[in-house]
Length: 154
Image 1 (tube, rainbow, N blue to C red):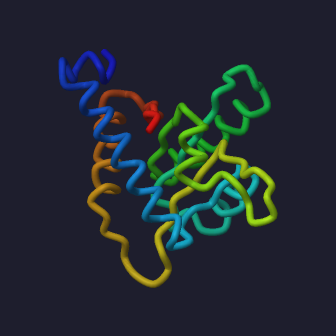
Image 2 (spheres, rainbow, N blue to C red):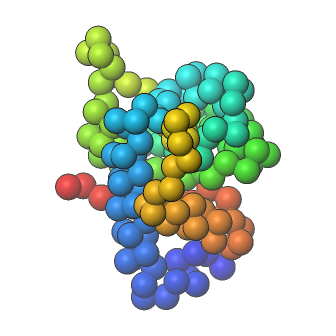
């Protein structure tokens, strides 16, 4: 049984609500410096301080990239072992819009893996993050360990 099957007519509304909450989480985390983008950078951050990571996003529009899928599998395993919420995100173009998509030097960011971390200064209590966390937890109860969220175009 999939998440959509259990959600009935409200599943598309729920997915849209979670997608909007995810956008809010990313938009509020970015100015606080709580975003780590890039597969290699994310792996370093996960290795250094996994307890500081509150959410892991895996994004791709190309399911055929075998090397990227291997990286995703390893990151997913690490996140599951360390109780880090994971989401697959489709629509990388929208993700790039939300996060700026460009490094300070003008080089495009690697957005295949994005981590959201806690700010060092205080405990982050974000209602949008709570919605996303609750969605991930409910999905795991339905044996969907890595639910997919489509970020709608704006």
